[in-house]
Length: 408
Image (cartoon, rainbow, N blue to C red):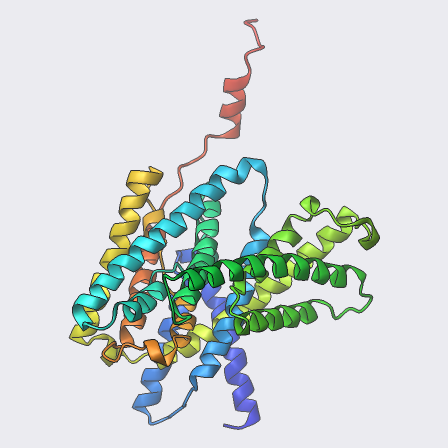
């Protein structure tokens, strides 16, 4: 392919993704699912007509990591903190953590029973499959009520963070010892301290620079912080999440006097521009990531009997845990929250990061694609059948509330 053809393909993919976003809002179809099926369709046509394209895992993984950073940052910029939201934050955190833990336990039992491989390896494979994908959930909430939307945004974000922290703990090589627990606790404390310091420095850089090129510089610095945190075995996404939260809730940040104060208008300007550019960037990266991941999927492998059996058991376990928690503990309306449990970008990225020493030799990687596609389809069904309760007419509300009028 020459340069012009490559440019046409790349731009065509972006236009197609934008069209999918319109369809998603109109027909409640997850745009990510449409991108995945497009990638699968392109792979089918390429195989049929003899075209080959070898995609190194590092390309898909790199796009996934950058996309994950953008999505977590976007989630942080969406989360407004105040005392009224403490119960919501507590409910969503407990929901994300408890559902993740029990899902991981059930999936570990399934993998252990079916594959008969070491327990720790099964746990490490179960954790990515237990994490809700904020990359799929957050773009699919536009038609829900504000309360449902806010709960699911918090839950998906906490699921990402807690899942990655647990994944990092189990892949350090030694678990359930005082030394490993100390290192684990120290890494969390270190990540929080680095998060606060780097967030303040990045904000000061944004507020004081006179150059127009500011935001992609900050994104580059965030990626550098993420990579450096990974090398130091810190939960790096905490740095990204805290930065987004601090920008969104800057009125609660008390800076020393020598760092200066910033008017609300300046903070709002930075917040709005960052939110806009983050949304655009995450859209672009998500587009290419899921197209490329779909291209790596072969339908023949997904239709394998073993893949269907193990994948179905995993999806059933995820549904069972979510159903029991929402009904028995949260006592929430099950619909459509029950079906908002898609697996996606974070699952794929973590599978790429499993150390060779913990690989399951008999694990079929097509199970990952089966679980991602099935849980995304379930979320789509929840979207399609969900209907918001109609709001009473404004005139009727006013008529009911007027008690000061007497009879003529």
